[in-house]
Image (tube, rainbow, N blue to C red):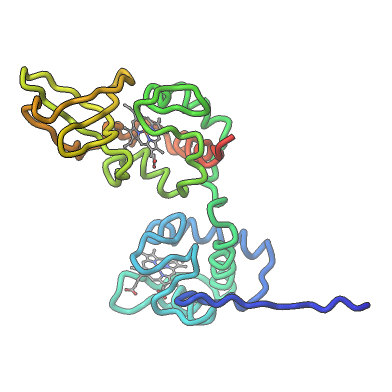
Length: 249
Ligand code: HEC
Ligand code: HEC
């Protein structure tokens, strides 16, 4: 019996099929070049520029690997994409790296050390004052036990250095002022026409009749402090590696 090799191509709308075989060494060299020259604009996961998402093979202009290489070297005139001082071989390696991204997917790491990141999380970062991981820590903020499955490296990094940038609907906080002037802020659990429920900073469930409130409003700023400047770049990378490693049990 002779094994018969099958080759199946999946062509999703709007994505480019991979065209070459690349070696692991190419991919690694390309990854280094990418992080040095491209990730400032395109982001660590390649999805910072609207309409372009390297991690999912989504391009607006490039039609194949050759055109990506030519864009890398020459840039795109009259746009924010500059020409780059790389050789043809280096451009190929970057393409190899970009092609490796969909498979690497969420596994792409921040290059940090998860064990050291855990120590930052539990110590200097004080993250457990608000967050819970595997049953330890406060319930005030979202449980991060499986955050590594839910979010990507770039999103995690942003949550830590710029918490106000994006607050998910399920993480909304609300501030109420009762008729006697008492202010209570907490995580919004439910709101309907007559009542409002939240979890306050002592993790207590609080129930309010709207009729008894002077006012209530969603909190636009995240209760989470920004850690920009409070952690070193290395501590941040370690912390993100730790968060990426949290995948439930
Ligand atoms: C200074 C910021 C900047 C840097 C650095 C940069 N890019 Fe870009 N790149 C852009 C912008 C902005 C666009 C979108 C241009 C447009 O179409 O309007 C773009 C477009 C592209 C495209 C075309 C995508 C498509 O939709 O077809 C590719 C491929 C690309 N960049 C790859 C790279 C690679 C690889 C590097 C590193 C060698 C890099 N870029 C460095 C800003 C940058
Ligand atoms: C004072 C309380 C507080 C502290 C301290 C705190 N956080 Fe947060 N964090 C929050 C709150 C509240 C949210 C939800 C609102 C938001 O997304 O900003 C949040 C959101 C997050 C998210 C996004 C969760 C999601 O579902 O996407 C991550 C990741 C995160 N925090 C990580 C950390 C890390 C790591 C630390 C320690 C360096 C930390 N937090 C310290 C309160 C805190």
